[in-house]
Structures are given as C-alpha cells and as structure tokens.
Image 1: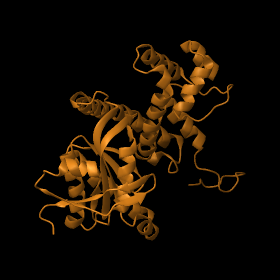
Image 2 (image 1 turned 135 degrees about the horizontal axis):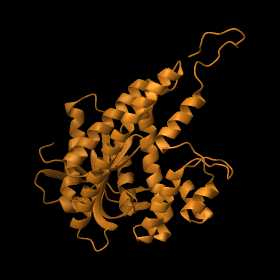
Image 3 (image 1 turned 60 degrees about the vertical axis):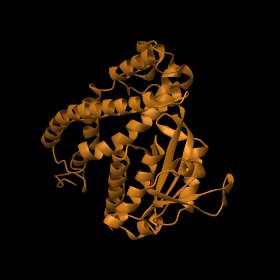
Amino acid sequence: MTAPDGPGEPAGRPAFDPAVIIEAVTTLLLGETPHLRREDVANLADIDLDVARGWWRALGFPETDDDSAAFTQADVEALLLTQELVDLGVIDRDEEQSFIRTLGRAYARLAEWQVRTFLGSMDRDLTDEDEAAGRLDQLETVIPIGERVQSYVWRRHLANAASRLILTESDDPEAAPTCVGFADIVGYTTRARRMSATELARLVDRFDEVTTGIITDHHGHVVKTIGDEVLFAADEPAQAARIALALLDERLADESFPEVRIGMAHGKVLNRMGDVFGPTVNVAARLTKVARPGRAVVDRDLADALRDDDALRLKRMRRISVKGYENLEPWSLRRAREE
C-alpha cells in the first residue's frame, strides 16, 4: 500500500516504514530494545565467547557482526539457563550442540507458522502509527496466551513420552524394538503440479489432520512429516497394523483423502532428538516404494509378530532387492475379511 503523494514527495512512497514495525515487534517480543554486543552477552553470562557463538549458530539464528548491538538481557539469561542445564547433567557436553540444534529447529518451524497467525495482519495494511500501535497492543495480549498454550502442550507431550520410556522393556531405551512406518501420498508430484497454492495447502492440511488423528487414536505417535509422507512409530505390532489399515480405509470412506501406500518394519530403532534412525527405518522406507497404491507392505519381522492375529491376513510377496538391501522379503498386510 502507498500513501497519496504530498507536496514534494516522490511517487509511490511507502505508507508506513516497515523498519518501525520491525523495531516495535522486536522490542515487544524480546522485552527491550537490543543494545548489547555478542561479547557483552558472553561476558555478562561468564561464558566463553566461542561457546556463546556456537550455541547461537546451533539455534539457527542469523549471524550478526561482533560490533552489532543485536542482543538483549534475554540472551544473557538464555545462556545462563543453558549453562545450568549443562551443569546439572541434563545436557551432556558431548551432545550439547545436537540438543541445542534440535531445539532451535523445532521452535523455528513453530515460529514460521505462528508469525503468519500472530503477525500476518501487521505487514502491508498499516497506514499510520496509531493503527500500528493498536495492532501491537493486540499482539501484547496474544503472545502471553500463546506461551501458556505452548507450555501446556509441551508438558502433555513430556508426560506421554515419559510414559513410553518407562514402559519400554529394552535395556537401552534409545535403541528399543519399535514398529515404524511411512505413509506416502500416491501421485503427489503429479497432483501438486495441477493444483493452485490454496488447493495444495488444503490437501496437505487434510492429510496431516487425518494421519495425525488416526495414528494417535491407535496409540502410535507421529515422528515427523517429510513432504508428501508421514513417518510414524508404535510400540506394539498390533497398533502399527491397525494404524496402517485405518489409513488405507480412510480413502474408502472419504474420496477427498488422498490414496496412500504404506511400508512398515519392526526392530531396534535408535531414538535421537525426537527422530528415529537405523536399518529398521530404512527398510520401512524401501517397502513404502514397493507397496502398490492403497496397500500396506511389512517386513518379515513384523509379519512374524502379527502372524497369530486372526483379524489380519499376511501374504508373502516375491523377494526383492532394493538400495542397500539384497533379497528383502516383503509381506502384504490386509484385513482377514479382504479377498
């Protein structure tokens, strides 16, 4: 938006200087106007400057010049709290970079979404300082509410994750036997090319909503979404099987839900920083590519674990060789009543 040109003013003058909005929002969110240099922050926190710089980079924050006054007392307090977690042994010194990097990525993704919700109306529609002040007052109310909701969700997820950890029978909880699966949208690339941005957003949101609901309803948990597929995990083979079949059934009940193919495997999985790694995950990913549209395929270990379940039908498929695995034995998974 541009303001009417006044006497002597160039045509197309911005209606409101974006720098004013940025400075006001930054001050509101950080509690004060940035006035400290990086070295000042490290000195006040009594932390080595290189350590502070490493933590800053691991969190994913933009690099700043050493002489730039880009920091506040909140940055000092964050360094002190992080150091306290290290001193308490919560963060292992050998793994502090991984811990901080994972934390930064999680909140960066959350912030990218929230900024469009909390601040989306504060960019190009402002015409004067009074209107900007009104929007900032609204933001000042919204931010504390958002913080309280985030704290609640975080604590709930902590309770759920702690329960899973306590109930695991593995001597090494970080490498416990787990069922992992990938649900992949069939023909996503082709569909995406034909869709508008709004239609694509609707498809992705619907896929995320339904898969998350089904996975959690059957006592699994979403590890992450990767483009057009979701990676999920479940502690029990029966839970994983019912997640897969419910995802396939959704297409039959609702044609607006995209057709999926699913690959699953069972075995030891390394749990690190909220993600899962290891051969079991790799096998599940390979089997996803083997599955036909609207079908689920599992590895032999998971098939063996499900063999006595009368509600399921398992059928051995032809052995295959895929990247990294020779002579892999896939099994198709269906409900027992399916022909």
